[in-house]
Image (cartoon, rainbow, N blue to C red; front, side):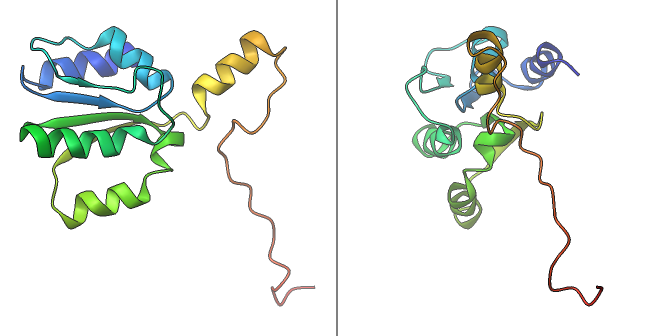
Length: 139
């Protein structure tokens, strides 16, 4: 599934008053490029001046301010930074639809490392490698 296909589906399912919020990263660029907006003030984005994790708080605020349906487009890296905001949304029963672009990597950081830093990758892959426990009963 490509980002373009995902946004084709979002555009088909949303209505004109839906607010689209985005986190920081490649998902932000795709949202700006591929979302069809029909009304003003329907895009909640840091505009490149935010940090990863911006989106869920923005989505919650957009719903509280407008009362309209809100969709958050986020990446797996940004989403991992939002446990407190997720707890707030659940505690206050705030309806936010979350579209999670899960590619297992900090996509924009990795892209920049590829393009501008000679493919010297550092801390962008989000996989978890578990080591055997030293507390196990096995020798």
